[in-house]
Image 1 (cartoon, rainbow over the protein chains, first blue to last red):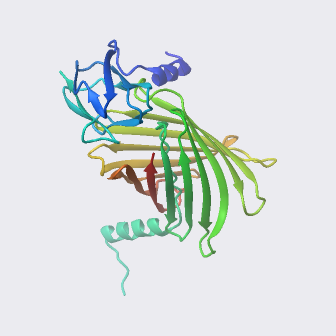
Image 2: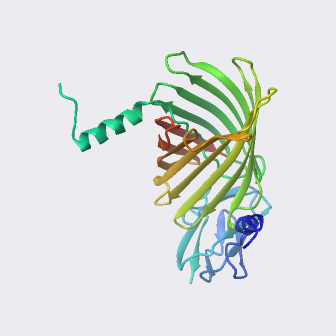
Image 3: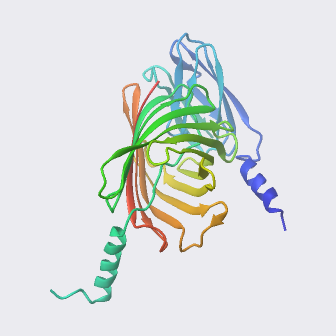
Length: 107
Length: 240
């Protein structure tokens, strides 16, 4: 029978999935998100590396992905996602929602 | 007038009586997730069926991606008594891992409070916060111990959890459970513990660059040691 403390440790530290994560790059520049379409496989964890080249902060937001993340000027953050089901997941910059838009396409 | 005698009437009368017996505790459920740069003003109110109330005004700031600090003032009222300032608190949430990297997002709650009535005692609270999200659901669990910093006092154990469905930003219905288990050196029997369960609603509304978040819940006692019911409302005006 497994040790309860070992079981608890495994439960708390269990990875979101066993598949190796896919790394995607997203750049904030001129209040736009580049590329505007990101593609990743289904059922795979994703590390979305976001780099802000603008001189103002931007908050990357997605209700579909359940994420809100501030990216300071000149800085880079990592947003951990998934594994996700096939579909399209919208992302946008909260401060410039008209121009800072992207879609994560899961195939 | 005749008293209701059918099983349905008796059940209804028992249920109404159960709602009116006294207060059940229901407090905030903390997410371990910290949004860097977030500032907020928050109002938390809990109203009990017996007339007791607790209201908290809070200022919140998240200077880093792993630390959220909150300053609170509490005004409360026992049934039939006037409202009074009860305590002031300094509350901290420390995120232990990046959101979504692991199966559980984990955090620590650390709070220091100063009572402004009675013995004016200091109190400390330490808790473990955990959250797991899928595309459509969020499960949050808080386990905490709070102790008045007085000789001979013991830490009281509490557990809170909420499961909610992410139907849309403005409307996320769920279920909340709160438990007061007793003190660390004397966890009471199930009959004397307080266990409360009820529906909850969480959502947010965008107001330009700012966000108004709300949480509402109505919980009912599950054990004979549990007082009847309480409703809570939490409003947060969030800005960057």
